[in-house]
Length: 291
Image (tube, rainbow, N blue to C red; front, side, top):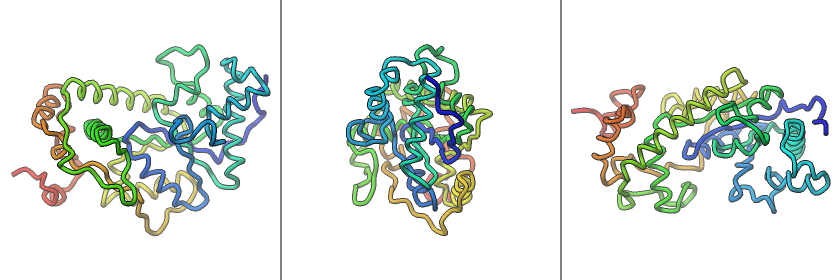
């Protein structure tokens, strides 16, 4: 079965990010850009239902396999290349004439692999992007400890995103963290971020940190860079409907001193210090300046 000949995917961008990376904030910015469409996590069954939503990757593959069973039965390079060509062109056609950015989390990348693929080889999705010259935005959060704390607080409250009238977390929602679990989560996330950084090297990729994206002084320039990468202009003003869910970790973690000690013992102390790019005045304003 041959893949689509000379597919045109120049309107397509993939947003690759980990959980709690600020992807909802970035997605709201992309939606505010002229001529841009944002598609939610295509491999997340809660976000894009494979039965009800035609843009679901799983739903598309299933429906395609009803007429052409090889798409459901086989995972060789020819079949997968053809599947990805047809799927991404299907999304572009549904969103014409707008450019499209698709959200794909780290943990979903394996869904696009062929059947036999060595564990440490660059995932097939990135090889597909290389061959089709698809743009990639790699969004991550520099402070991996904050990612872990945010995730644990969200799991405790069963509230993952604050939008509209959704109340943000407060000191009363503070939790106790297991030291070894935190260490494992931080180290695992760092390994994943490092691997993705290696895998997108040489591709048409824009790397973005959540901290720079939302920075009070530099965020505007960062967002303008993203808009230019997508081939459009940033809005004169932008305010995301999403607001921060989690207060500082020292407020939300009851055993914060234990976590600080854990970080210092494992060469992760930089995560419990003020960000090096922040100005002294900013540190003083939020109470983190050293006395």
